[in-house]
Length: 198
Length: 210
Image (cartoon, rainbow over all chains, first blue to last red):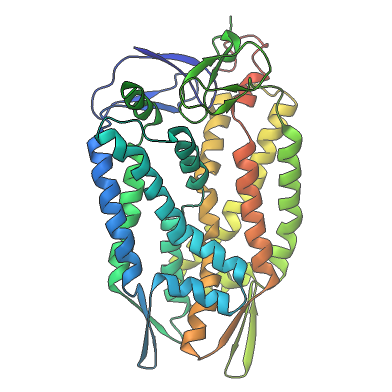
């Protein structure tokens, strides 16, 4: 049994322990208050695979531009840097932030928060790392960027062809892993684990 | 009798959800994660109105000015947001026309309208259908970032066309205004707190708003 305030309507709710795949909803406004069966181990595995996928999504070309048979492979970071060349630095920062800087920062912060817990230690600066994680969260738009790639491919269809590169696979996998991490991460469960380390 | 955390002098930490007992209006550190907490005061309606107004003003140039100009084989063509949708319809790319229409016209517009409605609801204490209003907020919060699709598409086109050398594309002033509209509405949405909707109705008779 634990008491929680609904984040959306402030109703005080007492939640009984949840089984796997069970959710606790606010009786007044339907906000999700807690989910059952959140395992710390699966999050840790996802963070590690996320980091590997992040490297892979940058290492190889994400797409190949084909203009009348002349092919130009492009990696994810090249697309952001190309905007710098065009002096569209505002766009360059926006694209770089949302497509690879913010996801890396998220994974790095998660690793910082979860790695010491494996050794039953409290992570250093845990409160700060936790708040940085939240501040960064709004900048992650991998799935929006992916949809934009598809729209761009169709838009260019008249004059050029966009062919998928190997890193696109890694990018899509990273996108799925990141949403799994966000879905599995329960701040309350995490902090109860931290408190046990003291 | 009220059943909210506020009425019990409890403040949930926005980061770690821990309930903290706070009896004064002073800033207090969360007992579990150390985040700065304060008892929820009167709704900060003015800040949200200001951001929303800025978004409404910028919505005009975002739609009227070209989002990009393409110079290809001597022809140069400018595209507005709606022009892009119409182009897709004319070339028969219906699904894409729908995606772009929803992401860059429907979503920003409905966000502005819904947020204005929610603000009015708090301001004038409209206490009907609070549950539905809260749901509506969750909807605009979820779909907000999808409006960035068009900004990214322009960014990608600008970047890619440079390598292709078959044309030049320049980002127009419209795209910058549009990006500003999206970011401003995201900001306004993040400041708005759905608990305001419930707070201003707390002193009315219970039951009617459940």
